[in-house]
Image 1 (cartoon, rainbow, N blue to C red):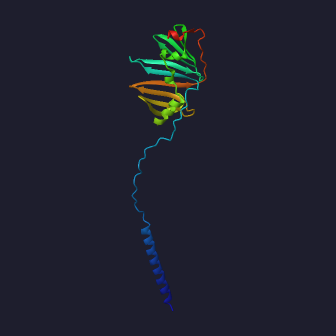
Image 2: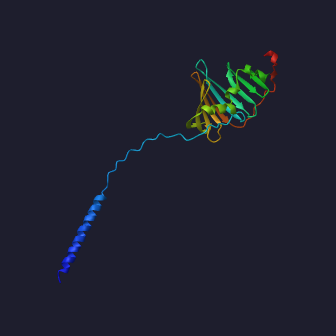
Image 3: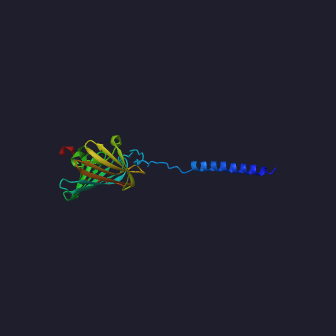
Length: 221
């Protein structure tokens, strides 16, 4: 009759022994395993996707500063302004005197030493300055787009610009384009190792046409 407790105790001991064995097995299985983790590969940062969509300078008003090297090592400077309506005016120091050349759709005016002369626009090549070299048309910008390489963002006169490298014939240029307006802010062009710079400041302006200019007919050219 009194052997029953002994049987019960034996059963409890057996349960504890089995339970302890299960716990120990689980504990061993739950030990932290050392996992070999490879160092993350370094990924070179990629420039954001951008599109070359500069606005032509032909129909906007601006004042532009021009700087280019002379053969003697000095720097030539000039100012080009446009009213955005077809009239442009170029000012620079030539031979120690201020020279001003004004271009309209049908004539060009040259003023220096207190005298002004009016010529037919067909004779503008005689002026010694071609404003087309500093004007960016839709067609020209379309050609630049074919070779344009994005360099990222850069500080410029406009604030923040997208920087692009372009090539055309023997000229390599860096063009800075205002991120807000897409207007060209600055262009640096290199030919034969010499770099010229033009910086644009867009603002409304009026160009005064010389009223007392002496007309020079084509027979004198």
